[in-house]
Image 1 (cartoon, rainbow, N blue to C red):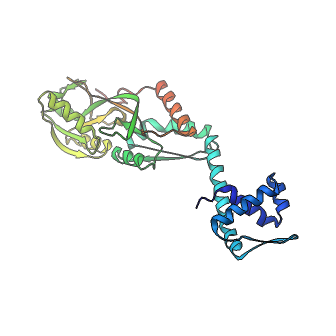
Image 2: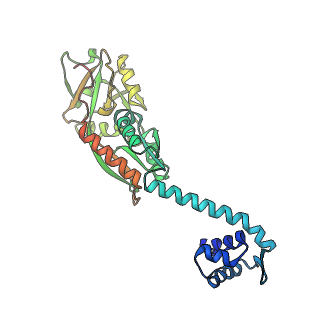
Image 3: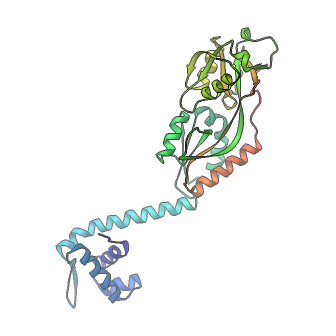
Amino acid sequence: MSVNLKLLNAFLLIAEHGSFRHAAELSRRSQSALSLQLRELESQLGASLFHRTTRSVSLTREGEALLPHARRAMAEMEAGLRRVQAAASMQGGRLALGCPPHVAEAVLPPVLAAFSQSHPGVALRLHDMLQAEVLEAIRRQELDFGIGPRPANAPSLTFTPLLEEAILALAPPRLVPRGAQSISLSALGALPIIITSGTNSMREMVEEAAASIGVSLDVRCEVQMPGTAIALAAEGLGVAIIPQLALPKRRLAGLRLLRITDPPLLREVGIVQLRGSRPAPGVAAFLALLRERLAAQPLPAKAGFRS
């Protein structure tokens, strides 16, 4: 059955006005065109929808059964069209994005605030969760896009770089020389390590780099969130390996911030989207604002830590 909206609209006009003439005037169509559409609808349904006389038009039992459903169908369609138009004009709609919590905290607050001020009708939904969960939500089309490190082995996704961040070490003073500002990857191999893990994890990147120079890391503790790694390092459990965006704004007494060298560890952070998707106007506007803000505000180097 291929009933279309024009046929339903013709049925509703006739039913609600009880007249082919009035319905034709309102729809700016001829009575013969309207009659033809009604006959097509009745033919598809296999039932007569109106009793017709020279003086009146009334619904048959089948027409009365169809009327409330046709009204709801047209109302739903009109509501959907209004929502699409509002989203296209950025006067309404929803923007859903996901990223790891430390990225959300470090990058997004000023961008979200500026976007909300410019487009108050757009509802913002920020899902701060593990990067693996972000990628799955994008694949399920629950998110418009995500922000995070470049995904590995993800042919269904696209990645657009935004910035490059360093992978850094936060060490208790007893584990590193006084005044040290950097540490080699081989030297890290002799220290207890605290590191985040999971799908698409930083741990894989760090361990691959270590293996390339013949070093095996002594992972003393594996956690999910960089903040947990920092807290454990502050208790002296080991050296926390964290991404630059995870550096807290508050000072943590007793921890040394060190650049990792030989080789330096860097990774891209960017926009992750479903391959083949076309960004809605609201998404495109948000991403343009995000790029603008990041270009104007580079990453902090040490975020209040002492070397």
